[in-house]
Length: 181
Image 1 (cartoon, one colour):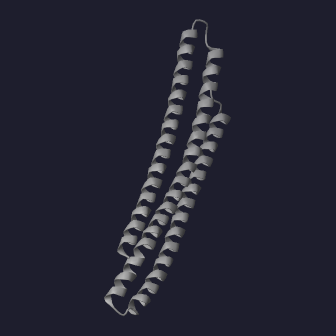
Image 2 (tube, rainbow, N blue to C red):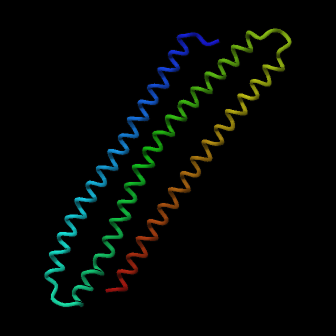
């Protein structure tokens, strides 16, 4: 059975993981705040410059040309902002996934060790019970691996879809701004 040292080590490991994940979460939030500050500063500067340019316009046609010239850069900046935001979120999510996978692997190892220890100390005639326990542990491990693979595939598909939508939006914006000129 589990010793006091094993329980204490397990709790210590869990707390280290918790604090590590908390730190990663704060890093992600910090990156988002930095991104938002940079985007806000850039937007304020651009609005100021655009206002100055708009005030110096001499006729309506020049104003229309100015407005249509802003469409593509604005869409590209929005796509860039979305991409940065996605990168931050997926990076933070990857850190969480890595930690969860490490914890799951550690738990699998501990359960397998516990089952092996129980099998060695099992009374005679309990071989079928031990075999059922080992089979259950193996099935649980296989299920966890399947779930991890499915999550990885879903993440890859979501990223590919995000990239396709961003590329499509950028292409559509370029085409639309090209028609207005």
